[in-house]
Image 1 (cartoon, helix red, strand yellow):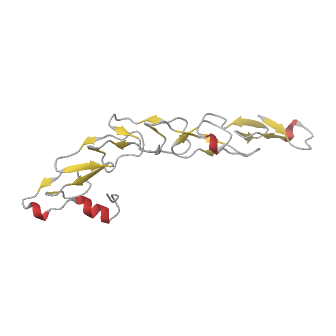
Image 2: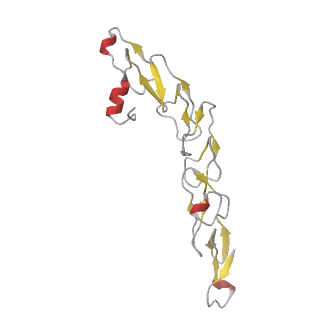
Image 3: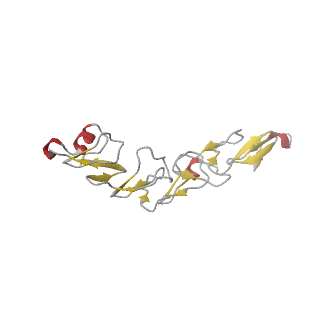
Length: 173
C-alpha cells in the first residue's frame, strides 16, 4: 500500500502507491469507480462515463468498459447497470446510454442511462435512434409530442426527416 520515499528516515516518509490516496499518515484504497495513478496523491480520480472499476484501481487504463446491454452514464461508477427496458439496447461501443430498438422510441425528456423506457412507435411515424419521425401525410403540433395526425391534404404534409436531417437532428441516409 505504501513505499518508503528515497532517503526516507521513518515510516512517516512513506508514499502511498497508485490505487491509494494519502489520508494523513495513512493510505486508503480508492473506492470503486475511481483510480489513482500518482504516488502519494491526496484524491482519487473518477473513471469516465461508460466504465467502472473495483476498489484500488491504479490507472485510467484499468477502468473497465461496461459489458453490452449495461451502462454507466456518469463518471465514478462502481458498477454498470443493465438497460431496464427489454426493448432498450446499447449501440456499438456506447456504454453511457441505452437506446430503444427500431420500432420503439423514448420520451424526449427521458433520463440518460439505464432508466430509459421504450414506447411503441405511433401511427404515422417511424422510430429511429429513440426519435419519432413523422411520415409523409402526417403532422404533429410539436416535436415533443408523440401523437401524429393524418393530414386532410396529404400533399401539404411532408415527412419530418427532411427537416430533421437539414437541422442535423438525424444523420443523412
